[in-house]
Amino acid sequence: MYRILNFRKTILLALFIGVFMFATACAGNDNGSSSKGSADKTSGSEKKAKDKIVVATPFALGVAAGMPTWLGEKLGFFEEEGLEVEFASLPGKPAEAVGLVVAGKADVSTTQPDALVFPMAQGNDQGLSYIFSPYQAPVFGITVGKSSDISSPKQLENKTVGMFTLGAPFETFMKANVKADGGDPSTIDTVAIGSGPAAMEALKKGDIDAFVSNKADMALFALVTGTETKLLPFPKEVEEGFGAGFVIKKDSSDEKRDIVARYIRAVVKAAIFAQENPDEAVKLNWEMFPASKPTDKPEEQALKEAKVSLSVTVDNYRPAANGQWGFISDERWQKFVDSNGLTDKISDVKKLYDYSLLDKINSFDEEKVRKEAKNK
Image 1: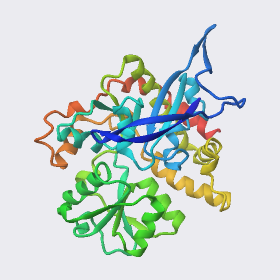
Image 2: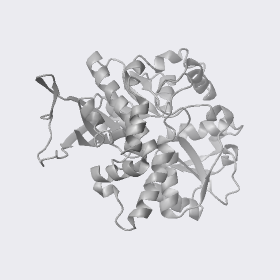
Image 3: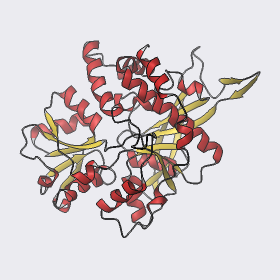
Image 4: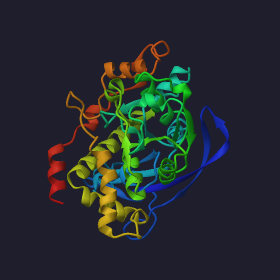
């Protein structure tokens, strides 16, 4: 069972987040009634209420790139884990999604490591831990027009670069690329652009020289707007980095940590399913969120576009070199800190992460999931 939460940000800000008032809109259950935890799971002869979890997402519900986040509902994985999942969606606002976790309004969110590293380097320990990363490589990218003379991050010097929001994680990611490539990021003019299609239009017109976003989103934006683009290559130290992961509060209770681990396990299984059967994953997503299915084009074209975005995301879901899903070594964390020039400001990278839940998250039969997906 899942629910969707809508948050409205108030004027008063604490740190970089707001204090949010929220109203809950309940998704109907199978018989049309609202679901407020009334669904039960059976354990022997006893019934137990499902465990609730609030997940903050930095993207709109129903977008193809985010499918693993909620697809466990349609695939039965949430049911297997005994979960009632509520989603608080803040499209294009990753810092505010993390802010909901800091404020105790959400239990878990996904974010780039920048969102933890840079505030900590500035003396702002938000009380969060990075607990799992499905991405063993960066998921963000920098795109330019296909005919652009720009072929490396260094060449963004004295140019205009667009992104959804300024600061971490988009701007810090872009600057890390430019710096690692031997350029001076302080010469770059950064601008906020409200939507992906608007960014593609700005690229066409020459209003911006490059755009920074999730690679899956950019692939979709380019396809649906007919914009020919190319991704800039990563400098070696960025290419060896890693992408977004799940964060929770360090002081989360053992009970809440167990619930989060079960949720992430369902997410990984959903991603594996989508790797094996992307067509079915897209169709199930459309069933969950009918508005996400375009009505102005043939279904075949809509399916193709959704699969482009989905594949860029789920193809990056893979285990670490040690065979464990979600693990990032101390050495890779240290390289990330060093490459961003923060070595003197973060003395112990172990303060950034806590991988004590990895064994629980990894306790599933991967081959069984893949086999069932292929036969779906």
